[in-house]
Structures are given as C-alpha cells and as structure tokens.
Length: 240
Length: 240
Image (cartoon, rainbow over all chains, first blue to last red; front, side):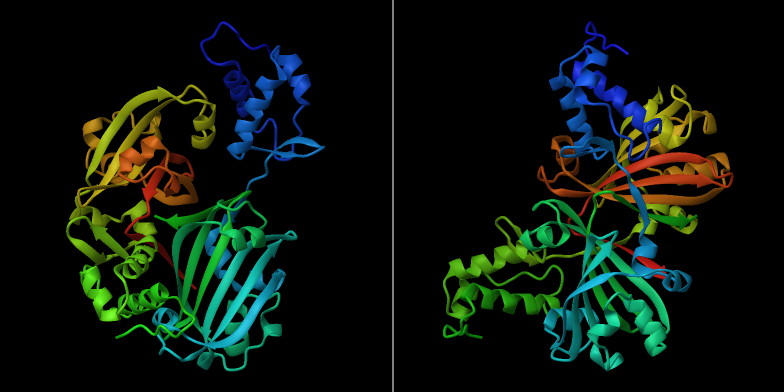
C-alpha cells in the first residue's frame, strides 16, 4: 500500500489510520511485532519520521508499546472484572494464589477520620495494613486496609501474606459477609505511589475504596486500593 | 481553642486538623459556613495567613469550597450509584425528568473502529449522538452514543431530548435488555471537555464506556460517558 500524497489528510495520519485498522480488525493481534520503521517507510513511500509519528501516537493511545532494542508490538489489554478484583468468590480462592507483599502491619489507635469511616470510637484499636498486590511479577495495586481489632483479635502478618482479607474473615473467623460498597475516584501518582507501582509520577491511577459489611450491617473493614491502569481495562457487568 | 505553639506540628497543620475534625465528625455539616478567617485567626491566636493555608488545603482536598464575596462552606458530596447512573430502572424513569441537551444527532457510516465495537460491518449506518447530561442546571457528563440504525429505524432527535436511551429502546421499540458491560477509565479534560463540563482544562474526568446487550446477545448501543467528578462520589454495591 502506498500513501496518497494528493490527499488533504496528513501523511502520518494516513499511516496511523492504516496501522490502526490492522490492530482494531485483529489482523495484528496482541503481541504482534510491527515491521521495522524503515521497512514501513519504504512500503508506504514516506520518511521514517512520518512512520515514527504515527507509531508514537498509537503508543500514546495505548494500542502499541515499544521495547528498547527489540521493536514495537501490539498491546495486550487485559480485561479485569472489578467485582472479582474486590470480592473474589470461594471457588476462585481455592484455585488461585494471591501474591501480596506486606509493606506495613501494625495495631494502632483510630484517628478521627478512620474512626468515622469504620464507625468505631476515636482511639479504638485497629489493624493498619499496607500491601502491594502483585500479578505476573508486576505490582498492580497499593492496598491500605483498616480493620477493627475487636472483630479479629488475633490477626498476624503471616495470616495476610499472600492471602485475601475476605478469605481470612470467612474461613479464619467464620464471618458472614453481606455486601461491599465501593467508591471510585482517581489520583495522580505521587512519588511514593509512582515508585511502588513502577509508573511515572503524575500518571492517573484509579482509587477503589471498599467498605465491607457483615450480616449485622457492621463495617468489618475499609480498604483503599490504588491501582495502575496500564494494560488493564476494568469493567463491570450489570444485569438489566 | 488555642493553638499550641510549643508543638513540633506546624501551626497551619494544627488549624487544619481542628477544622478537619469538625467536618469529619459532622459537627459542621454540608453547607455550613465557616467563621470569617480573621475571627478564626483571633480564636486560634494565629495569623490569617495561617488560617488561609489550612483552609486552602481543605479546599484542595474537596472538603471545603469558597464562594467569592460570600465565604467558605463545607462541601456537600453527593453519592451516586453507578448502576443507576448507567442503567436506570423503570420505576425511576417514570418518576424522574432526564434533562439532556442534544449537541449532535446524525446518521453516519460506521468507521472501522466503531464497526468493531458495535459488531457491525464497516460502512453500516448508525446513529451518532452527542448529548450533555444536566443535573440541577449543571452539566455533569458528556455522552457519546452509537446505535446501529437497523435496530431502531426511525429514531429522531425529538425522541432523545430529555430522555434516556434505555427508555426509548424498551418502551418505544419493545427491546428486551439483557445486560450492560461498563468499562472504567479516566481522561484529563481537553479544551472542549473542560468548556462543556465547566471545569478547568487538565482536570481528571471519569470515562464510563457502556455496551448494552439485548436478549439475543447483540450489542444494541455503545455509549461513552465523560463525567466530572467534583461534588460527587460514585459508588457501587456488590452483594457478597
């Protein structure tokens, strides 16, 4: 295919449209390595600068990624069900391993804000936990959890390493979970978050705040998940 | 209350903590007007600069807002159920008015990307609609909708003014809706979005992309909602 230099559409845009179609149609699947830029330039009869501009815009749009020294590839976008991310069900617990790196584990007194969130008294003891969720050896989320100690008097760091809190609540303490209320917001990565999640500072991150209720309508935990968005599309299915 | 100038905690931080507690505890409810800054300065025995710094940080955190010439108030945060936002149920349709301003309504040929999203052929006709969703006289979301024309052959702009698409599908065409799949992402407001939604350029916006499926598992519409976050907390409840 040659580019039409008579058209009012800029050359890089024509190249971009062509590459875009290859990706969207699925002809170039996830992981497909693009031809070298100079080969594409020859093929289209344009400069490598034009090719590079088209490619970089598709990188910015998340359709392609570049690996230095290796080339340019079609991005694999993983779809993640939010309801599973925050509320894994039993069968899946059994089958899966849940790697987490515990960064902080302590029993502290609730300040006014956390007491209000957990509906306990200021000064009441709670577990304060900070973990890094790992998937395929990559950090995907920073998790901050706050749990009233009274409900789970004997929780230790070893219990939560590589496990889900829901697992511990239900199987370790026989607590009946009723519902999770999840708030969505966003944050621009600060230095600590950027370093922990291996992203650039200022990148947009998702914030999921989860309140878990037991059958007595008590809040048994509050967790804040700070999640990186790259290579994942978070979705939910709602029955109509 | 006086500020303790012997403490290692900066004065503005002590003021901020005090104000924070008043808000979080609910003692100062949504809409409460703060005392004048010079009165607070006298009360705490600090400068108005110190007060202003504490107040401005709480404004940045979304707990307070300032109205020029009027004063500083405690923010009212409205909680919005995402599943209702995207999939209003019958009873609510009847009771509510759904103001929308239609910005664009046309029948166009699907390009490769939209054809792939809607699972139709490139070049097939579809409705392309752009609307502004209004709540309490304020723009809250930009909505882009794409609907295969074949399914709803006789749709007019008058039909969608101040109405929900789901309403039209079910009541106007008797379509049985099965489920909605909703993808979450974010975007930084560009100039057009900022102007439409009355926010600053570069502000973080939510993007909800909704695919609606009928009982035959066909996609009957694809909508992209670009939503401003201020004064709203979006949440979901998931049964465990």
